[in-house]
Image 1 (cartoon, rainbow over the protein chains, first blue to last red):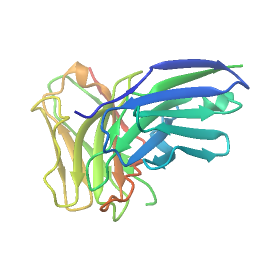
Image 2 (cartoon, helix red, strand yellow; image 1 turned 90 degrees about the horizontal axis):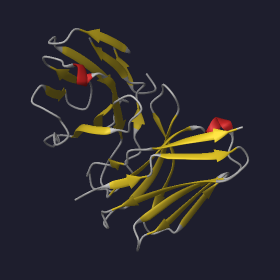
Image 3 (cartoon, chains in turn brown, purple; image 1 turned 135 degrees about the vertical axis):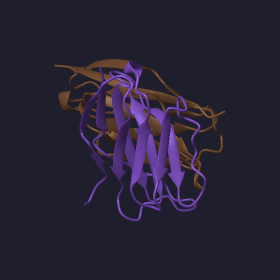
Length: 111
Length: 116
């Protein structure tokens, strides 16, 4: 079956790097996503990666994909208090199949 | 409008009453999702509409929950005989999801439902 798993909490100090991990089960996943949810708001797409890529970098964000292990990670460099939010991993395999979300990782950034 | 809108933004109801939640997706988006998010918890998938295909209702928690979508526009989520455990934020998302394109979802602000 389809499943996406994430750890529930992560706490880091301001200025450190944060690494949020995710595992998924569907080996036919084509797209993998990271969404961010700030308090009281809906989710917003942060970044996505195609399954034929190993890495994608966008400013402070680095996404790493290990397709063999079905493991996705999001690294936030120089984490700021404004990065405190819930981060959701998601996967889809295109062709109109629905996207599957993880339960979200709540990131706490300590000043 | 430019984004996904939902109404009402807040709804307080008494146990046993029926409620209707509305979602207006981004114009032209073929896919529409409903999710439930309980306080402090993650997303719970409820239902998925994609074009003219039969909706994926596999996430609906009970037969008290139903949803409709008119073509590729407005969707309503109906909860009958509400229970206290239905209290949550109900999020709607839409995407332009054609063939093998990405399913980047655009979320509405949610409807916060409180059942007393």
